[in-house]
Image (tube, rainbow, N blue to C red; front, side, top):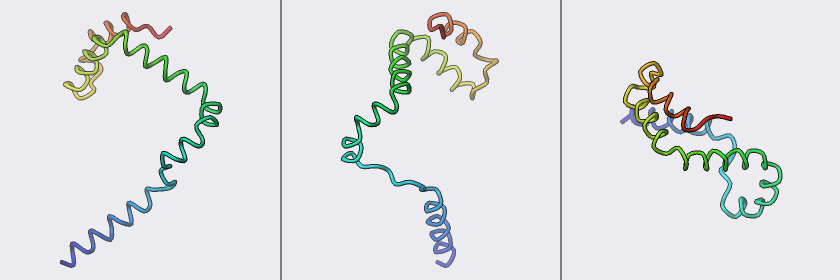
Length: 92
């Protein structure tokens, strides 16, 4: 019982140390949406471009990600899938 209490105290201390800022509620996000949109326009545009890119390269991206997952992120074992992904979804 004492060991359990010690683990519980340690877990709560770790959890308390991790949380720096509270997570905003939906009301806070909705109220600040226009400010966020203005201040983060570049990031939003980049995100939308990536989202569009993923729609056009789904098969190649899934094959590459699947290979990386299967081979525990060993790039050398997924060069074929990487090449196909880069060909279908060039960076520029």
